[in-house]
Each structure stands twice: as C-alpha cells, then as structure tokens.
Amino acid sequence: MKNFYCLIIFLLFFNFSFAQKKKKIVEKNSNDSSLIIQKNLSDSELLDLVQKQTFKYFWDFADPVSGMARERSNVTDYGPEVAATGGTGFGVMAIIVAANRNWITRDTAAGRLLRLVKFLSKADKYHGIFPHWLNGETGKTIPFSSKDDGGDVVETSYLMQGLLCARAYFNKDNRKENELRQRIRWLWNDVDYNWQTRGGISVLYWHWSPNNGWAMNNEIRGWNECLITYILAASSPEHSIEPEVYHRGWAVNNYFYNGKKFFGYALPLGFDFGGPLFFAHYSFLGLDPHGLKDQYADYWEQNKNHTLINRAYCIENPKHYKGYGADCWGLTASDNYEGYSAHSPTNDLGVISPTAALSSFPYTPEYSMQALKYFYFDLGDKIWGKYGFTDAFSESHNWYATSYLAIDEGPIVAMIENYRTGLLWKLFMNIPEIQNGLKRLGFESPYLK
Image (cartoon, rainbow, N blue to C red; front, side, top):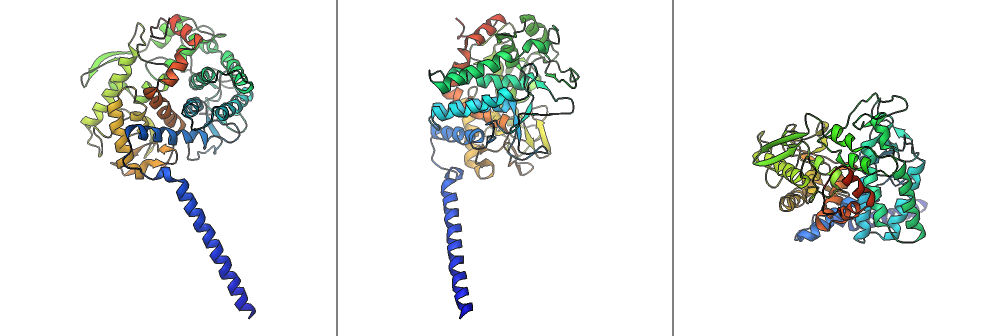
C-alpha cells in the first residue's frame, strides 16, 4: 500500500511538472512570435519589424552592468564581458530611434544612457580616448591585439558620434536629461584629438598606448570608414586639429582618389570597386551625405555609387556563387565560414552580409528593399533570429551564421531610420560644434548657414 501511495504521489508530481514545462514552452513560443516569419507585411511594417528586432541587441543583450554593447553574441576567448566602444556608439543611436518610435519610454532610454555615461566616466581612457574593447563590468581595457592596448581614436569617434546625437535628442529641462547632457559634454571635451597627431604631424594616428606608445604606427589616411574621425577632430571644442591635418593627412594616400567607372558608375574616391560597404555606413550614421561636399568629393555620389557598384558586382557574379543576384547582394566586413574578413568585390568569398544592403537603404531604397524581402521571406528560417538578421551567410557553402555583431547590427537600425525620417542626421548635423568643424575643413552642406 505504501508503494502504491508513493506511485500516486510520483504520478501527480510528474503530471504537474510536465504541465508546468508545457506551460513554459507555450509561454516561450507566445513570447517568441517575432521569430515566426510573418507573411503579407507591408514595406513599412517590415521595416518596423527589422528595426525593432535589431534594436534588441543593444537593449536586451547589452552588458547588464554598464549598458555597453557587447562585441558579439558568440562568446570569444575573452568571455562575455567584451564590450565594443564603437558598437556602443551605434547602440546609443539605436536607443534614440527606439525612444523616438516609442518602443521604450524616453525616460527609460535616458536612464539607461545615464548609467552608460557614468560608467564611461570611470572607465579606462588615454588622453580622453577609449580603447577598442572595454570590460563591460569593470571598465578596464581588453587589448584588441598585443600592441593595441590603449586608446583607439576611430572607435572613440564612433562612440562620440552616438553620444553627441543623444546630447542633442535628450534636450528636456529635467534632472535626468540635464545630467546626461552634462556628462556627455565632459566626455566629449576630454577627447584629445590633437594628441593623436604625435606632437604636430599633419595626420591623425589611430592608436596610442602607455605601454607601447605609437608602436602601432597606423596613420589614418583615406578613403575608408574614418571620415567621422577627422570631422570630430576638427569640431572638438577643447582639442581640435588644424585643417591641414585633414588636407595633408586624410586626403593624401595612394588609395584616396579614384575617378574611374565600374559597371558604369563613377567612383570619386577609394579602392577599385569601392571596398567593403561599411565605408559608406559607419561615418554616415550621423553625417548626412545629402549635399555634403568638399574639394575632394560629393559624398552622396561617393556613397550611392559605391553601393550600386557593390550590387552590380553581385549581379554579375563573376565567381558564380550560389544565391548572388538582384535579390541577394551586399559585401562588407563580417563573419564567414572561415572566421572574419572585410568582404568586397576584390575579396569575395561567397559571403553575403545583410547589414551591407540594409544599411544602404538611404542610397538604394528600392534595391535594399528587394534584398530585405529576400533575406526575410526566403531565407528567414535560416538567418532571422532574436536580434534580427544574423551576421552573414553563404548559400554556396551552405553556411549560415548564428552570431550577431554590434558593429553590423547598429548601422541597420540607424541607417533605416535615416532613410525613413532623417532623425539621426538632423540631430548630428545641427550640432553647433559639428557645423563649425565642417566649415573649418571647407565642407558644404545644406545644414551649414
């Protein structure tokens, strides 16, 4: 009889436990409705979905201590505490978009960003310049390479691009937003761009470290993803560079001018075929290329033609990779089946990175929408996940990444928003210091009075 009662108790417990597990499964599935590929979405609804889902990388997956953006979703040798300085700047912009679209409240967004800037004020920096990677819990430098263990002025510029947009957006006269603006102002004023000229050399240097000095010896010369660094350096209220650093440093390089045509599109600057598409994205999350010109280029023409060349190459598909075409294009830096590479027409491994076409929405809206529909409706069961599209895929190699990278996810949210409303462009381009810096370097823009 005792064994009988034990059996009854066991069965009751088992049924209860099973019911609870079943309930949890049902709840999980109901909570994950965004992972189900939804048919019959309008273009606007699809853009809403992609932006909102991608934003979660910077909100739900942010470091729980600092609020910084984690470098990537798959754990590296350093562990989950690796936070990306530049990726955090992109994430700040995603949070602004989320607040503006009421996915989160303005006050909640301001609170998260205030926690972030308080953390940054105590984190490692070198002459006001942050390292490429920080430990998101302690604020200590995580070396990017053996000698890259100090300040990274390019990653810092991506961070400042985002923080300055936040300073402009959160403009209400209340305690939280007042403190947020003030703390951003302190961080911005502390960035010693002039230090990165090594005592007055007419070019910016990418790295400096207290352990290795200038040993990296990486001059920042164009054309690449670093234009924003020179714009901010010329705009700095406390430590600005002289204009000749831009003209004699950035604009002097064997790969600065191009002037040739590829697939019928003129390319003013840069490598043949344009290089990876992130050149047209990272600096232009805040910089509005519409009507942006200097003595070297029309930057709308530069970025749009770069994008069209990249797409045209994928349509021609000289290496005959599976899947390439008008619906499936976009070569840029991302993970691949062998590791990581800066993919481009001259470094084509058969890997398409969704961020390339999606972050190009301002330049090629019709073609980017065509690619988006293919990525979502045709490949969604392989590359759509809890933080939007995974990093990359190769149909030729039957390889589909499961990883997400901050520097690839952030531009998707920001550049789609710039295409839809121009929100981040308007915030950044109306900042007085930025307007002053652009004028000092000889730029034209509709924003400049």
